[in-house]
Image (cartoon, rainbow, N blue to C red; front, top):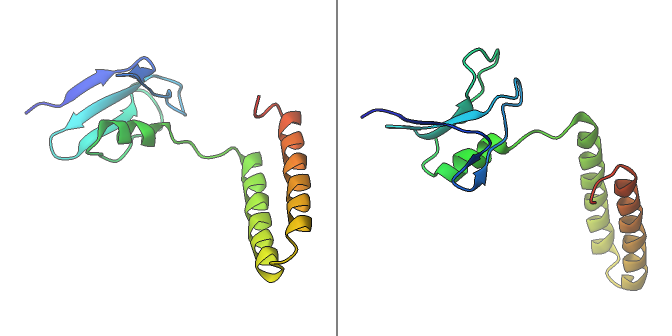
Length: 124
């Protein structure tokens, strides 16, 4: 049984695939006899040669390939938001009757977050 290989130009069966994050070349998707679907860089001279693990479902392999780590600046924002969410949950559990003030404070925080995201050009 031979491997089935398709070189992609950014889309496969309606499912968009990102280029290699290291060399920006289109990826290949291969169905391996025992490992399932694997997506890898399609450029044989790529210095990194990234690839996914094998997946039984083609779309899962594509989703894994398209997943990227957040940019360094986004990591701090994500951590800050998670810390706020933990503190907010603790406050709400400790003060269950202060619903009006809680909702106002939450609305103000969310409005500030939306404004900050708008300044960065996000959410547009």
